[in-house]
Image (cartoon, rainbow, N blue to C red; front, side, top):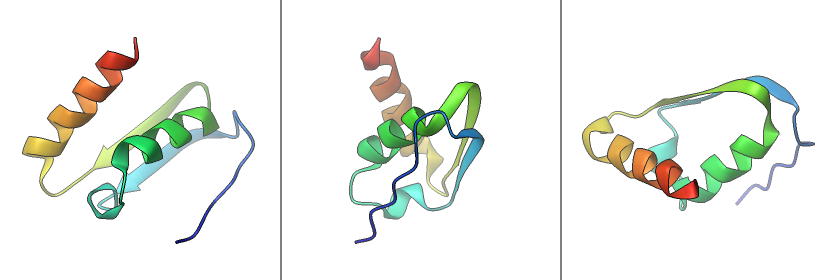
Length: 65
């Protein structure tokens, strides 16, 4: 496993292009990515089986608030 570390608020745009369905913990990956985004940054998530994964992501983000 490769551990990637960036300072918080480093990126304006982060894209997961057909990779999120391959990681062990998508929720942890999204949380880490959100810390790396600058305020008002954009995260783009694209998955082949979005019918089930997008619902999990939306529910996860909704539960954060």
